[in-house]
Every structure is written in structure tokens, then in C-alpha cells.
Length: 411
Image (cartoon, rainbow, N blue to C red):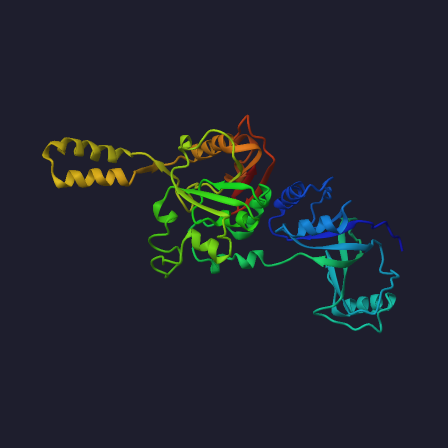
């Protein structure tokens, strides 16, 4: 048996969803909690990562309390090339799991491992408890693609990641959703990448139904939204859910925060305004982060304030009728004053305006994170929006279809 030192070494098991976001989320959480140095991932980017932490369990617990993509973490007791591992423990209740990577294990093989480990650890007289065991052990057989050989490692579970974020915030049970409400898992990843933390101030300039703001508020940030569409901001009109009909009084952005117990001062409200009009803000940085899923014309079209060409003709006709002093003219004027017209917001202008907004509103060291659509066959970093005042920190891809994807850019 060839053993290696395992002091302060932990095995992290990542979700196999969104692999390109693992490193970015992990490094951001380490930065948030001041965990230095940040452990390096293995070159193969496997969902199993053996990482060393000088801070031991305390540092790992902080990461587990925030991460969306880490399923669990295990303290390594022994790192060896075979199952001949002597160990001795108390007579407290126990159970043992066997997890294999890049190989299949039948029931007979699994039972033989459990018996071997139970005997070698002196647990033959200890009670077995599969639900609430005091000592939970896991044997990982992690395959490595070197000469088709499988490297076997045995680990002991000391704690597991808390669960419930994705199910608790599932869209099916949420009071108010829209056509483009962000997937909860991605929303929490985005909040982690902008370092959402207690007391920080975050804004979503295209907030819609507030899906991204919910994730930041869950991490005790104060959040503010901006939305140009009156019916979306005020939750009026037809529901996005099939067959539901009109929206009710219990369906609104504020109701979503109340649903999850987050309407305790963290939710600052939604401003009904055009985010492309930067002069409505004071030009110095007071936001810690900007999160956004801009409208890029797939499920929601981009709009900004302005008068489209056919509306100009109507305005001309109203002007010509002013001398008539008729009731219709007064009605048209009143409507024009209370309901500003909108025009198409070109996708290229959306991202350039968003970069400029970040320069104006973010404090020094603040982060801007937004989604950027691409054709995978045509993608290159040359097409990404840039600013001399912002540095690209992460660029993570989420595949959508065979030739389309969107990238989460963090600056």
C-alpha cells in the first residue's frame, strides 16, 4: 500500500452541470472569505478535485455554505493505491458508501468492500445506521485517464454541503415569473461571481421579475432593480404561465421576496425607468456590483424610450389639429405625457451602454456580470464588449443549442 500525506487535504465533489463555471465560482468565494492561497484545480478539470486548505475545515465550511456547484466535501484520511487500509475507530454508529468514477461496480463487489472496511476499522460490533449515522464513511474509486488505469482512493466524510437552494427557489413554485426569468442555479452562481455579501449594494438594470436580485438578497445584499416595462414592473396583465390567465394581487416582484422571507429591508424596490438614460444617476461609484441578463431579442425584445417613425407622423397630425381645440387632441396629449413611447434597443448598443453604466456606477473594485449571446462557430474574444476602465475576470460559457450559447462575462 502506497500512502501519501493527507493533512488538510479535501476531496470536493462538484455538480456535473455547468462545468465551465466551477473554477470561477470557487475562486470568487475564496476571495469573498479571504481564503488564501486559492487552491489550484487539476488540469483535467474533473468534477472530483483534491484540494489543500491551510485553514482546514473552517475554510471548507465557508465555501460549502455559499457554493451552488459543490455537492459535498470530504476530509481525506488516507490516499492510497489499494484497499488495504488499516484504521481504527470507536463503536459509534456508522455507515459506508462506495462511489466509483470511470468504472462500474456490482453489488457483490460493493458489499465485499463494506465488509473489508468494517472489519479493518474495528467496527464489527458497532451499530450500522444508514440514515443518521454518527460516522459516515465514503470510499471513492476515482479513475484517472492515464494508461487506462484506475486510481482508488478512500475518504471519510466529515461534513456535507447544505441542500435546498435550487429546490427552494424553483420557478415552478415561485409566485411571479416572466418569459425570461433566470434559472435559479445560474442566478446564484452569478451572485457568487459578483461577491454578493451582507451590506453590499447591487443593482440589476434589466430586472424583469427580479430573479437575479433574489439570489443576491439571499446572501444578505441590498438590491435595487430597474425595469422599463410598466406591466412587468407592476405585475399587470397576462401571466407567463400557460392557462393561468391574468396576474393576481399576490403576484409581483415584492411578493417574490416576501415568499422567501427576503422582504426585510434587503429589497429596495424597482425603479420604472430606461436604463440607457445614464444621466438619471449621479456619476460616481456607489454600487458594489451590477448583475444583468440583458434582453437580446430571443425571448424578450430590447426596448428604450424614443419615438418610432410612424409615431412621428401621428405627432405631426396632432400638431396640425391643435387649432381645433377638440377633445381628441387633449386625449392624445395626455396619453403622450403619461406613457412615453418606446423604440427598439439595438443589441450592440445594449452591451456598450451596460459597460458605460458599470464605469459610472461601480465603486473601485466593484464587479459587473452580464450574459452575452454568441454563435459558437463564430465566437472569438474579439467580439466581446470592452472598456479601458474594466478588466475581464471571468468568461464562462453556457451552451444553449448546437451552435448557440451565452457567456457570463464578469468584469
